[in-house]
Image 1 (cartoon, each protein chain N blue to C red):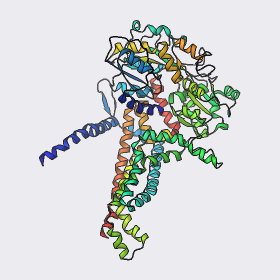
Image 2: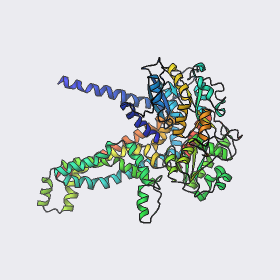
Image 3: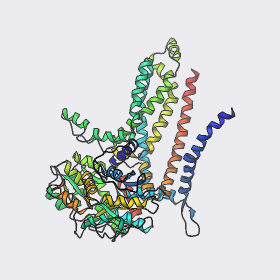
Image 4: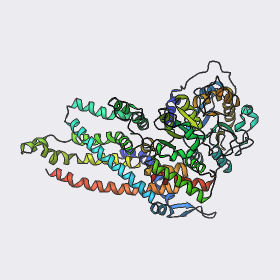
Length: 358
Length: 279
């Protein structure tokens, strides 16, 4: 819910025109003065000075709005709201491409695309970066309080530890059907992109059983503060949030379960109805620059799509040195990318309400 | 006089666009589904059938009403004495008291609710205090207690102000008359003050019950998502599943239930207040 607070605060920031200015000597870019860019991003997902530096460089105004789920963003976009740059996740980009809601990028205007790291190149929802340029990426895993949960135990049990009654009343699940069913499918050894009815029902039972026996709490962004304060012992979180939690509380550990995970990425796209696609290209290019990517990744904790930043931050001088959650696991054959699947989407959202309200 | 009448037009236009049209859209969405290539939309009762055929939604509805009723009752129990004491104070102190009741509403509800997370947290203020006495840490957050606490906290001012308003407008000579006629304080309260303040209590109930029964972010923030209320289901249908038809159907069902329960409360209101009038 920090996102919602950020959203409220952002209103105040826009009005007062402040927002931190860490820009002593930026080189100016001519030709865009006075223009406006509408940026629709996740809450708590951008560096402190990224927006204000971009505004100073180009002499433009960036209007930021925030969403807390891909579906919320989709609903607003399809209701006709106009944005210049969005940052949806992989499966949502797949859906937006399918529904012809995005415009192809002019890669000649985005030279910084050369900075992309290996892990986010040629992703199968948009192999040639025709429509999208990665922003952050990562996996989903478990953070745990090392004082109460032995590392060997969680490594050995993987997602099944969520059913271990020793930890009853002290687990957080992520309140999104996609992520929770992912853990269930993986725990049962199925693909998270299945549309086999039996497998879905089995996953539903797996989650229901947790709901009945483990008294889990379902949270989204609150999990960050709650795990920093070690409110509970185990939580399902995105790797980037985990990196942030680990950097704030050294007692917390991160485990990428052996059963596999969701290898996800969020990427910048320009919707069909964008009013200022020229500036949008400049913005995307700017985000991929070393300075902006560094600020983003340092502030938020998610793995950068910029290769140099990724290497620097995980090196000895970097902020996330020896932070087990920062660098996403790559090349593990049980990790999967989520695909858009209308049948599965509807089914899961219906079942998720049932899981939580029984 | 004509010129005064036209002053209502801005409001009428406002309400047509922001209240009447959206309501109509909800009704249309609730009763239709996407049709085939020839007809775009088709009439359907599927959305309602789905709601009533699944036990889960009924349970959610039941839980929503239970929490809303509990919130309302606690608000009356806490709010009435406060309003009563306030209304008996000197005028200057009354202003201070009303001021103190309304101060929290200056801050956005969402922010205030989020603050409760910090208070109820395992390492939060409340548990640190209890820790001094060797108690705890107690799990407050993500329980039904936290949800009801959050609701009572957010909606209590509405109850207090309504009751206070009706109590402070009361003619004090009624009470003097009652004691002249030999009624003791308890009797005066039960036979005079209480009946006269019932309209305030009723409008307080309306102002507390309605937002409580449809609230979705308090259970989400403080209940750890385990307390799925009808508001959460509606939100979910619109934002996550994208099933606007079903979401609208639930909203409509809620609206009807609320209209009926308001009608009943209004009825209850009439008898005691007319009795109070006779005194």
